[in-house]
Length: 78
Image 1 (cartoon, helix red, strand yellow):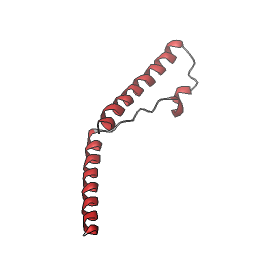
Image 2 (tube, rainbow, N blue to C red; image 1 turned 90 degrees about the vertical axis):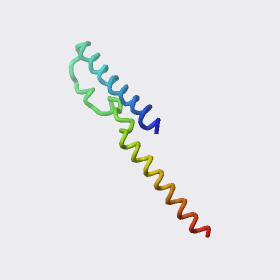
Image 3 (cartoon, helix red, strand yellow; image 1 turned 60 degrees about the horizontal axis):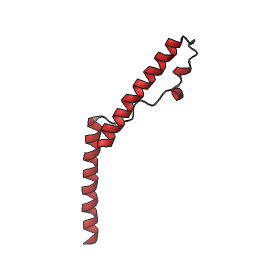
Image 4 (cartoon, one colour; image 1 turned 180 degrees about the vertical axis):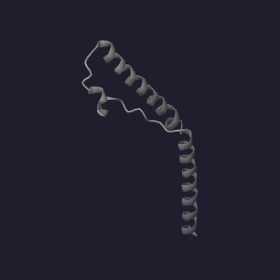
């Protein structure tokens, strides 16, 4: 959960800043706008992490799935 929300979210924030910086550098250089930065493959992926509600939902789903698996396996062994 720490990785999903914390580390990857921060990496996404960094990607946003790098993309903005790349565009600023192109503007400062005075290079003509050839649409190169408009292409998706030229930019870094910005949404990497999960929102807090998604992390909570994933934790809840994991608990429910684990509980159901436990109950089903107990019934089979009896």
